[in-house]
Length: 299
Image 1 (cartoon, rainbow, N blue to C red):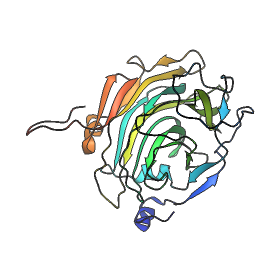
Image 2: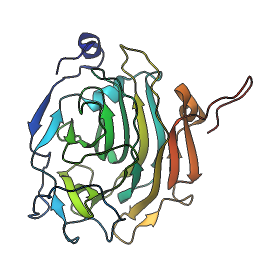
Image 3: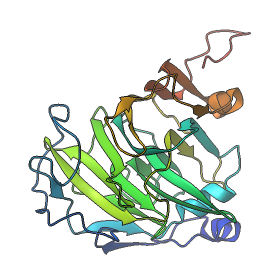
Image 4: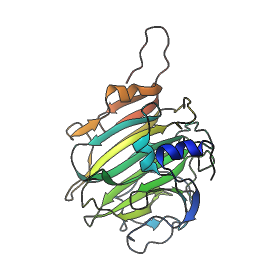
């Protein structure tokens, strides 16, 4: 895909553009699951934990849209004025994270490197500037998806976005996602769709059987086309963590060691982060309208 501003962005970030149809990024198959049938968004909350053993568990379609845009390079080179990180990460290691993400229309501009994403991530710093991770959520990007919100994953084995067009999203949808390992170092990303767990990808990552966890809403504005993106507040709730070493999941609450964005990040660029229940229920997006002189944006 040829985008305007290509040369400037490549010079800055070394990005490779283009999209191609490819098999789901997977360095490990979690059993022999049937291909997920066509279906709509779930009408009820998950009835059990994600995994190959879940009732009616299935594998996402064998055809996904793979984008050569290097998300890792984009994050490394983005300027504070064009990149907004809203959310939190754990101060300790866990074996998984799950929760619900609301879908909104981020008014992303087509044919740009704009994107809005809401996602969970598991990661480990391997040293020497090398970080391994897997993330999953929904995204709206300027270079893929025709302006629609799309389920995606990203992992550092392939270093590419994987878009799952079989899941037809719309603003107002609420998605349950689960990222975890069963103790073998294979990290799985699952989506609760059509009232069944859909395996998006399974990756053998060099992060072991536990990892640091993040929950974030991200907004990126194309550095070559400065603009103000309007992002209705995204709600994230019911966030739970799986203990390292196994055991029942628990809500991400104040007794969990947590690193959150500072005030400047929470309020930068007209975006606000509002912790409703630390740290498992929150919103991030446009700040409440200012109604007069001297008014300040609220966190």
